[in-house]
Length: 67
Image (tube, rainbow, N blue to C red; front, side, top):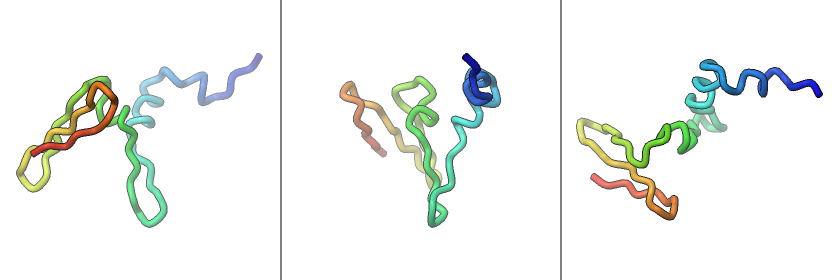
């Protein structure tokens, strides 16, 4: 069975970087996956206009954003 090029390189650093990069959607919107944002963590800090916000994954895999 022959694997395609994408699945052969799935574990490569280039593939990991490609997964972490957002996709440009119609209308110029950017789409990020939560997997790329959290990178295995349960909480991240987002800085916006000099203010820190925390984005957390709950035990039920829901998102909570707090200031």
